[in-house]
Every structure is written in C-alpha cells, then in structure tokens.
Image (tube, rainbow, N blue to C red):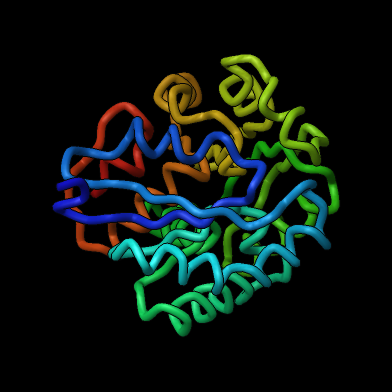
Length: 237
C-alpha cells in the first residue's frame, strides 16, 4: 500500500510543474504524495489572492483519498495578504476537512526559526510588487530581508524555461555578507538539486520553498527521518 507511513496532500497552483516531482525526489520510502490544483494563470497579486477562494473545495477533494496532512503549496499565494494570511488559509482548510494543514510561507517562517535565521537574502522569480509583499511578510515575523531580487516573471512558461543552475547562480547573486541564509522562493522554481552546492559556496544554509514545505509537513505529521542532499533544513528532521 502506498503511503503506509503517511499520505501528503498537495494543493498546487494550476501552472505549477515543479513541486510534485521535487517532492517525489525527496520523500523517503513509505510516504506518498497526492495532488489537486486551484486555478492560477498569472503570478500577480490579485490572482494569487483569489486562488485561496478555491482552497477549501480542493482540500475536500484530497480528503476523499484519506491524506494525513495537507500542504498549501504556494509561497506568494500564502502570504499575499500579509502576516496572518497563511493561518487564515490553514483554518479554512482545516475547518473544511479536519486534516492537519500547513502552507509554504508558514513552513518557511518555521524553518527560519529552526535554523536561527534573523537575516535573509531572497531570490525569487516574481515581479517587484510580489517581492515587496514577501519582504513585508518576513519582516513582520522578525526576519530582516537584507536583499530580495526577482526575475520578473508572472507566467509559468517563463519560469519553466530557465536553465539548470539558475537557482544556484541567482542565489549567489542575491547573497550578502550579513545574510544568515539564502532563500530561493517559489514552489515552481527548480532549486532542490542546487542547494547543497549553494550552501558550500556561501558558507550558510540555503533553502527553497519546496524543502521548507516538505520539512514543515513532515514535522506536523511526526515524520523523523533526516534527508540528505537538499540543504541543511532537511537534515534537521
């Protein structure tokens, strides 16, 4: 039986092609991942906010396959309305299903705390208005953003065409000496295979949305198995 240790439900923006395969690559034996989607055609603030309207219905679909926990797998979509918006999404989903839930932005903040990070450099694929909201969210949780830069994309097709190594090179570009961590934002930004090299070459933890999400849902479900090869945070399980 698949998922004999745990079944994880993912709610993804419809344009996302990255989080599922990256979860499949990272998860240990006995864990299964089951996905549903909510419509997102462009990564703009109004559309990211509207995506949450469909979250309860999407979660009820996942509940029918008996998942043990649900991850709302979108960084910007789970912080777009500011501090506390992620917890509103969690409440909507848990009220609809009774299933333990987290969001990517919730997991990122919890992972910063686990790593003792108070200053971060952030690489994103986003446009500047979304970067500004992400910075506000992090700093509202006591994590100073010493630098944040984006690629300026709103369409999935643009992000999906970036070459291997972009997360590494862009992460090094945004890093600053005072940053205690480099964070590569967006669950649709292919980054997991470059985090170990980024950590070695910057001398500090490197994390992405998908490693933070996996760490957070594993912690919520009580799964304790360190995972090697994808950055410091997954060593902490």
